[in-house]
Image (cartoon, rainbow, N blue to C red; front, side):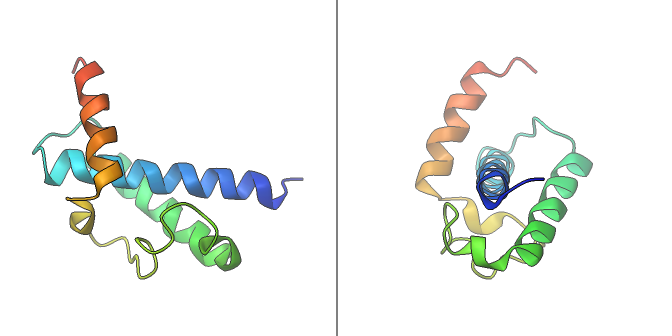
Length: 95
C-alpha cells in the first residue's frame, strides 16, 4: 500500500511535468510529447488533486495550481522554474 509520501512524490512530478510541457508548447511553440499524452498528464494530475486535496497545499507550486482546471497550461508560460527546466530539456531533446 502506498503512503502519502509516495502520493506527494507523484503529485510533485505531475505538476512539474505539466509546467514544463506547457512552457515548451506555449512559450517555445514546440511539442515533445503528443497532445493526447499531455491531456492524459493533465487529467491524471487533476484526478490526484481531487483524491488528495490535503497534499495539494504541501506539494510543489501549490499556489500555481490552486485553481488548476486542466483546460490549458497557458498560465505557466512565464513560470520562472518552468522556463529554465524547459530550456534544459529542449537542449537535450533530439526530436
